[in-house]
Image (cartoon, rainbow, N blue to C red; front, side):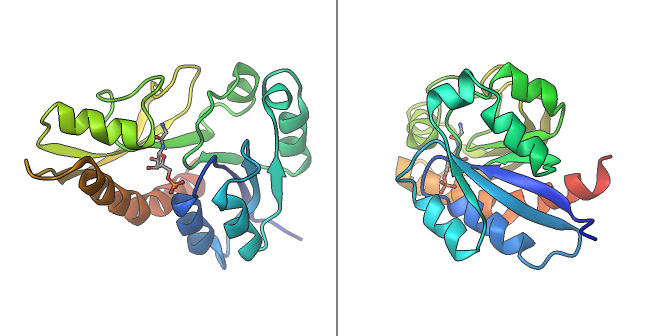
Amino acid sequence: MDLKKKIAVFASGTGTNAERIFEHFKEHPQIEVALLFSNNASAGVLNIAKHYKIPTVVFNRSEFYDSNAILNRLVREEIEWIVLAGFMWLVPESLVNAFPNKIINIHPALLPKFGGKGMYGMHVHEAVKAANETISGISIHFVNQQYDEGSIIAQYSCQIEHSDSAAEIAKKVQRLEHENYPKVIEELVLNQV
Ligand code: GAR
């Protein structure tokens, strides 16, 4: 009997965070990454999932927003947690309501600063640089109906030097993401009913 708790990862792009998550849970006794969902048929993350033998589902806008296809699949596969790892679409209300406090996201800045619509990937680091911030970091938070506004689960910060380019800030932040996201997911999944 398979008693592992099942996670689905949603990702839109390269998938370096997804990769760390797949690796972390590869032989985990209690948690399994059961599915990878992507809205982007050419996303690098699909090849990474294949490498880890994780089944993938590619969907389009109307399947996501105007049908129950994704929700039905999640229920059918007994998914308990949804982990967004570089997923760039707003999660529809029907999914948020079906998974209350069971959808988590990672954002590459210290929310509530530098969040909201249009704030993703390099845009975030460019804004941090333009604002002359001396620290940045990551925010792991529950997902609600607004971009980047759900309650915060954990934050980690790093020092920004005045001479750091946006790309250098991105690198520092990415290091924090890779180090911390899988561990935070593990802790949540194991400790929340
Ligand atoms: C990550 O830095 C993640 O925090 C960010 O996209 C990147 C995806 O990289 N997410 C957002 O900006 C969400 N608003 P990855 O594909 O290499 O994991």
